[in-house]
Amino acid sequence: MKSFINVEDLGPLDKAMAEAFEIKNDRYKYQHLGKNKTLMMIFFNNSLRTRLSTQKAAMNLGMNVIVLDVNAGAWKLETERGVIMDGDKSEHLLEAIPVMGCYCDLIGVRSFAGLTDREYDYAETVLHQFIKYSGRPVFAMETATVHPLQAFADLITIKEHKTVERPKVVLTWAPHCRALPQAVPNSFAQWMQADPDVDLVITHPHGYELDPKFVAGARVEYDQKKAFEGADFIYAKNWSNPGVTNPGDYGKITCEDRSWTVDTEHMSWTNNGKFMHCLPVRRNLIVTDDVIESPNSLVIPEAANREISCSVVLKRMLEAL
Image (cartoon, rainbow, N blue to C red):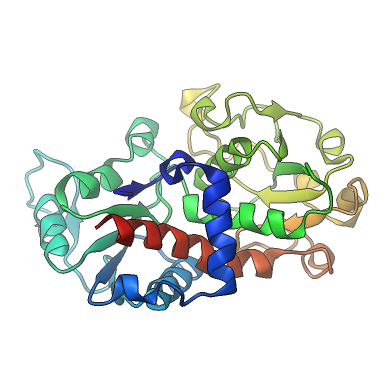
């Protein structure tokens, strides 16, 4: 596996899931694969779970790890060609990327959407520059449009905690005080649809339709209560307007309806549903204290499975070297 961005990069999903549970039973089984190999993790944005889980997964596989915070200690990087670099950016990404590639065997990249230029964000410009110029296998640690390591961990968590063969899984929009990217909901929808044993329903206000590239064929219910009825899992996540129905709204907050906050009443509509969120979460905005602290909250097991999803990806990439 030379790159990891979307679910199809893993090949047959059932085999990847089996591998995930194998690794969870013995996290150090493939430690020999990473001996004398180096992972470079490049962060253009803040991180907690992604940084810790990816580094732990690499260490489990015997790898050395280099972590680079681009905005804390490195030269400011220019990303566009043709720019006269007479401002505050001292180095171009087109030189920096191959230099980074000299010092490692695998590269993980985290770079969020700017939420001002939809075409630029959805072209995944920064990520594809790393794939093209680094000379190394590259995987996404959340990008402008996707967060596959999170979605993989989410699916592992659902498999572990489901009580019916084909659970109803609801991805619900929830309010937020800041404009957030669509990466997590995009990947979550994509991965849930890739598994035939998941019944996915997406609910959100009108105008918040996700890009068909990720959700084509998914069932959308604009009435949140109807969507929640009989659900086995509730996955809450805010996203800013994707600009699908109105390109001028891209990246904006066009709905602030607090009635979408997931509280005890919302969860009462479900089939004793489990609550999920990728974290970090704004309490009493996305979800109330009582729901996230309830026995049905899976946010911590979900975060723990980030180590497992990343282990599978790194293992596959090391095997392909």
